[in-house]
Length: 203
Image 1: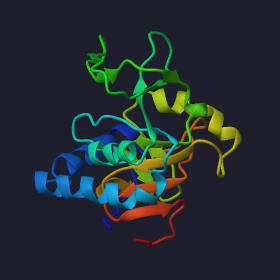
Image 2: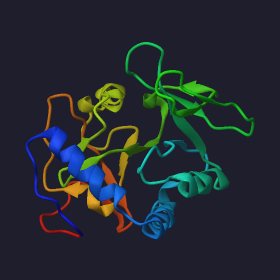
Image 3: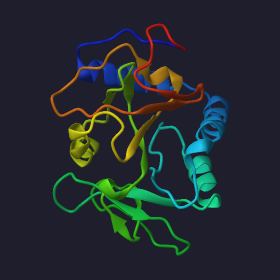
């Protein structure tokens, strides 16, 4: 697995990871999406409430994974940005065509039954970079940091289970950390589903 040297400057690290992610050929991206759906299969259980996301830009596409979760009888919930503040809602994906574009961020959202993150069993968390200790760096908006702040009280094995989703090239040795950062429980990439923290030098 590629390991990128740690950088102290967040913006520099964001630029470096974005370039690496955007450089991935379409065929590689498509195979990675299929691989993560296979690797995640043991987490996709009937009756579970599963939070996911719709890929934006060069993010790893979760469509196949989320379709597999629906086929297995899990409830799939997608993030919804609030009108005020940064604490996300998660809305249940249904059969009705209730899609809309967020008026400010122009991202696709679904208008369904809403839950807070605390009520979910598992969340597949988007990220820009993640380190071997399980700390993630996002796009900088602070939405997931705010939404998952309650998990800092239960850093080991709390609910919901937090599974970071990324390409292998997004794994770095260390990301700059802040007091409000929440550690992920697992990392899901095209190489597999692995418990965090990862051993030094581990693939």
